[in-house]
Length: 263
Image (cartoon, rainbow, N blue to C red; front, top):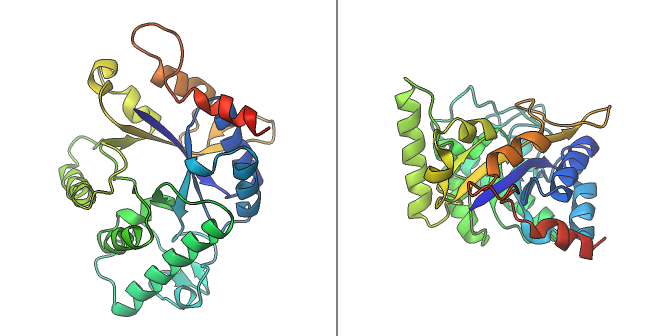
């Protein structure tokens, strides 16, 4: 099964427009929303108007913007001058008791804000993959269980050649998620990762595969992936065409039909 997830929903009007374009064209079947970003209210409204509440999860934010809780704003590990400043280039090897409490309260606040806006939350992932940090991940797993969030994104399952240590870390992290019963998929990566798999139709046929997109509508009206620069209108149909030659995408074809009922 293909899970094509549009990250960063709620980041800005331009991102929201890109995400909705992907839903409307059947290029994605899932999205993750950022509760502390300027476009959050608009994203919630769009989700409700188009009946997408059961396709939206939390894009936990720990690396950009302002926290929702005072304790997190005061955390020197996560914030500088009251704004998130955590960087994935600086590894998190340990969390103090105060940091664990602040992180847990911030996660609860971000989840609560989404649910107050009518989004039950089907899954959890994070901006810049911050939940993949081992000690942050431990808190995320505990809170996902506490708050009844059924699925959490796994770490990237495609490892660059010669980077075996990174691959081993990701394997251990994903094993922990699976033991907790929370792993959202068997594989995870960007479109380019999957397109590089030889004979991918046969290999991936019976796998649960999550693909991340970062749709953004440019000033000229073109929808691009803000991270890879790919055009979702081109890369997703190429990735998900059936091997039997049916010439159509296997991304949930019901998305557009369901959205039409809410137009």
